[in-house]
Length: 304
Image (cartoon, rainbow, N blue to C red; front, top):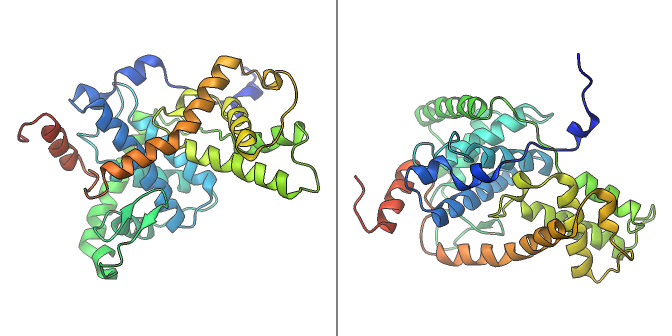
């Protein structure tokens, strides 16, 4: 048996340019801007569900990566065929199942019923509960019949994800690498100061926000590059001076890649604000049928 390279434990399989430029959703007629919106809100939905289920961020981040991988490439899923809320739920269920904190189908499906009800609207908070609407628990607690139907759909979607990804669920996150890099740079001492604590917290926050990036940064760049860019941006925002010279080269990052990542990470807040403003008084399409209606509306034609 050939030896397994230790680098496989620090890297992820990346998507190709062809996979990004030609997706099943685009081939089915979904506009590029709408596809970007659906990816963003699908990742946000997954993040919000993970918070309600009190799952560790590591599990939630891996679930978001699985969700995004499913819709990449011409051989991937299409938003017109597979509802993003179902893929989000199945991604979180699958990732949690493989972890030390598996979730019951009933708990997970009730959370998604809550998040996709009209009582809740997702934003970057990640929740905004209008005070004018009563919190009627029965409106997002599934009945037995609804639960059995949703459970069957969840398990079907889980198997669809596994087949589409060829059972490749491997995902390495940059968070622990970032903390190691901070220690190497002398910015995270054994007895942390307020400045070092703020810098580390800001770095982790940037990495968590990057999961929602429209550029799919977690699918196009390796963890070491993401960790380095997050440290660079966090240090600039916190006013912390970094080492002289091109310190990022130590971790095999060139200036061009670092610049692109820093710019992409810094632009996420503007993108999120734009999305929230556009959908402020509208419901984001969560099912294949709702996406079809939105596509037809954008094309100024009635759905078939």
